Length: 260
Image 1 (cartoon, rainbow, N blue to C red):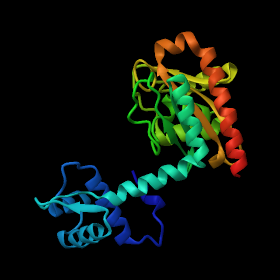
Image 2 (image 1 turned 45 degrees about the vertical axis):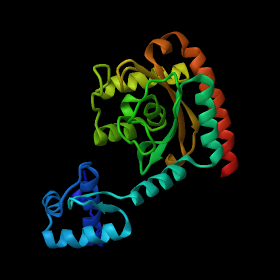
Image 3 (image 1 turned 60 degrees about the horizontal axis):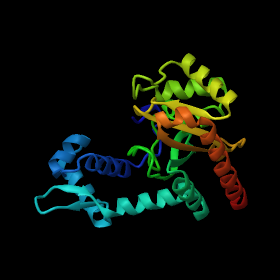
């Protein structure tokens, strides 16, 4: 949701409207007509027509034979570029893929992007449940994932409180922590353990563990590493998981340090 109070004084309305059109089309996989887009974006049909034609010319939307518009392939190109920028050096992706292959667990990297916790790289493991949401760019549920906990633990209590108040504590499952008090106690337990952990808080039957890769004074340069596996396996293998995560984290830290 956009904050109207944060609207810049030099906002270019046509660009803003074009992005709203693109967002509306993206939310409708079956496609939308110009009139439907205009209604959803609260624009005139004439304005919408000009915006859609421009977006189609640039490849960001595609007009189908039935007159509806869907997202164009240029969006996929921008996403690939985003994934590459988020991931960092090629060696980062190679290290994650090797860790996923060696353990069978899916591995994820995360950091603060624009002040919000986001997944920045992922490598799926064959023994981990598939988590379709945890892809580069996912920026929800920091309170319910070990990756998010690891990064939020680097903030001061006041900074965490403001973060949780702004982004909320959605109950993804019945095990999700939804109060600041419970969350703070959970983070403290993770600090003592040397690894942040969640069991079924984001997805029922799935566990996730995370460690910090790169602490830094700059919030945007802090990086965390996590892995996901069946909750039943985590219950019996927590020490093994921590040891393997720390080994991979050290390798990633070396790569990130060498790239700076």
